[in-house]
Length: 216
Ligand code: DX5
Ligand code: ZN
Image (cartoon, rainbow, N blue to C red; front, side, top):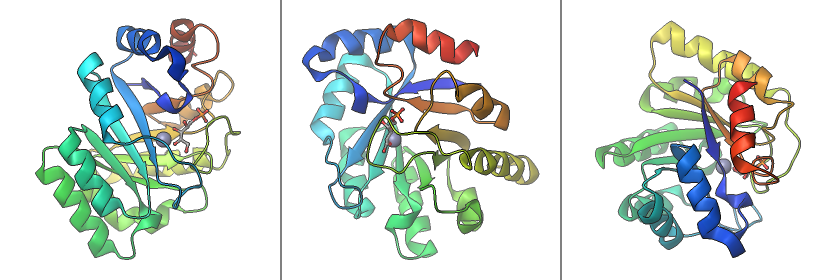
């Protein structure tokens, strides 16, 4: 089942309520990018904004933490009521740390996701897939909206889909970066289920654009 997840990084914050109303009428899940100015150059939002968005909309909060200290930041978003927390493979040193953090998130009844940057191959996380509810393929370098789609991400989606089928894993396959009316079809054909979109959705008629991404 394909879902379109608006990335609120691209929202016009001078008109937040208008956009939250549009999102809740159109989508089920919202993608919330947390950036710390270390793991990526950009700084974005903290837990209070997420809480406010969740209280106002009841949307499922898909929290993508692009941070160097995912253990600490996960705690913050566990306490804030996130529904899904996805951290980066590249941010932790060992598989043990990664597995421990996945367990900790899931022990709080929150779904755990792992994300890989464009230069990280799927082979790095093959042993870890069974611990996760979601795998997020970054199809741009994390840190900024509005970048061009990296084509090699399609092979990663196909690989993740094959591994999922082969081992009967349950994870959702998600993609983030450069999703628009020219890339969406190939991403769906590759087997991706959750598609994050920011700059494309928030320029122009939001509802029409979500519809178009679903139809294409
Ligand atoms: C990038 C973020 C994305 C970003 C996607 O680091 O994780 O969620 O907002 O934006 P677009 O759709 O503009 O590439
Ligand atoms: Zn993201």
